[in-house]
Image 1 (cartoon, rainbow, N blue to C red):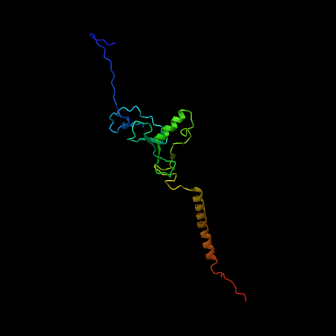
Image 2: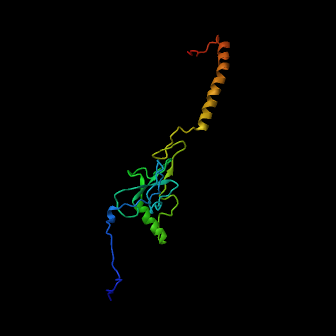
Image 3: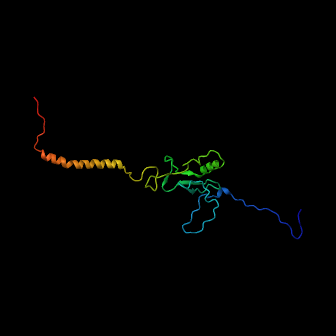
Length: 178
């Protein structure tokens, strides 16, 4: 029933049409700006599934309003486990799918220890491509054996010199047998 009196009721709807294919979401943790300026509100910040101990989130712009629009790259001091492939990062879409399987109590590789994690670099390396050492590894048993051998040779040289000097007149040779 329409009220045409002094206080008419106003009913209606309004809508806003936004093309979400052109709106990116950033699931990576919000970083402080160097200037200290306030960051815009990002309700999706920190919802990435990167394993924070060894990887860090990097957003991928242009993929639209969908989860997994990020890469998990290795932190400083870690390297990507598969050294043979070109792309050295974990795809955010893959992590999101595996995490969803885990939440649905399905088989998921997300919960396997060390999956989707980078491996530590060798001692003394800040950045590395694989497990190769950055500094020469000291082989102490080999170094010790070489030092002992060198000391033995040096220690035997003076007695050999004295022996040679003392017996320098002795002729050493072979007799001819006829």
